[in-house]
Image 1 (cartoon, rainbow, N blue to C red):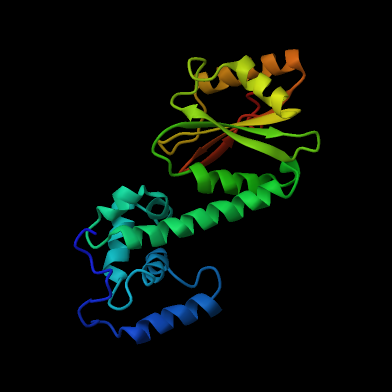
Image 2: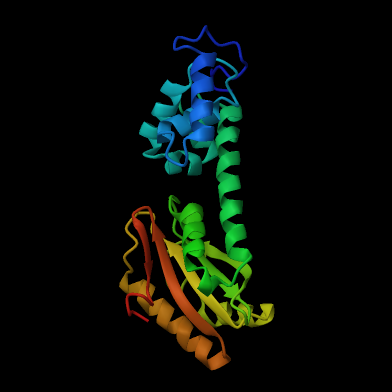
Length: 236
């Protein structure tokens, strides 16, 4: 631990203690999706690690440190534990929520044809990649019914042929029995606008796909500021 108060031996609460927690609980259960502010969501999640006491200052400190609720939930456990007042138990409480959110979003993608549930795919990718601090490249391989059969992590780093070999991407799809794919990567800068290299590697993979009978439906770029579809922008 990092000198935090996760043992439950906290000083007497200064804000109404149990009453405050009960009010938050009621608002959460009856107030709908926007019942709690972002810091209050974190505050409530931290109740699992701190059995009593005021978690509001810590919740606000996390928002300030990581920039947003999503940034806090997506933060590396070591980075979370380094924030004053946090430790392994409280970091684990937040990471469990982030994991649950990813699995719920992924289930929505896996259960339906991807092209007819496009928004669910974008939601999944945004949750999973929107706050990454490294550039990550993935290929979503689809079967003949456009259902996801493999979410393949190609690697981390710049999107170019040094990291992504077009024919290898296609051949892996053929080995999986895939008939189509969607390329995905993120921009850690937050801005999802495609670079010249993004467009060029997409075109090369599409050319390789045509030769070997595999369709590239799209290339989606994700960032904190949103997402971009190269096909929707008319770039491929």
